[in-house]
Image 1 (cartoon, rainbow, N blue to C red):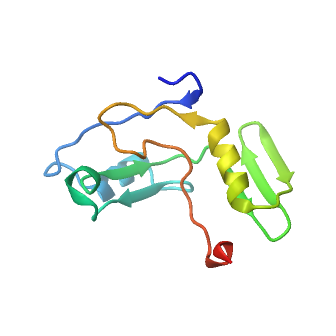
Image 2: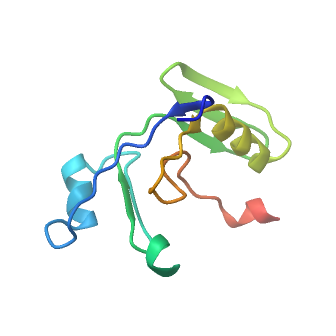
Length: 119
């Protein structure tokens, strides 16, 4: 594991005929902060994975003039100039170890960006 990684992916290979991604998510408890990402394009190595997780650990909500961070250590209002730079810094601070044989995304920040971010 990389010396800068604070987290390591936890994974399990499941035979596709015994479980579906949706049923796996429901077994984990599909509540706030849970998600299911499925890859359907990108060739055999990329398109064969489903990413399922439950249990929101932290959140970052970005508004026009500030960002709100909430995590186990409390919450904070953050200033920023570039929202993508703020996200990059937070993800870099809490690096996720890359394990051989796993896809490029083994954990980290999951969320969405609205159209306005690109403007």
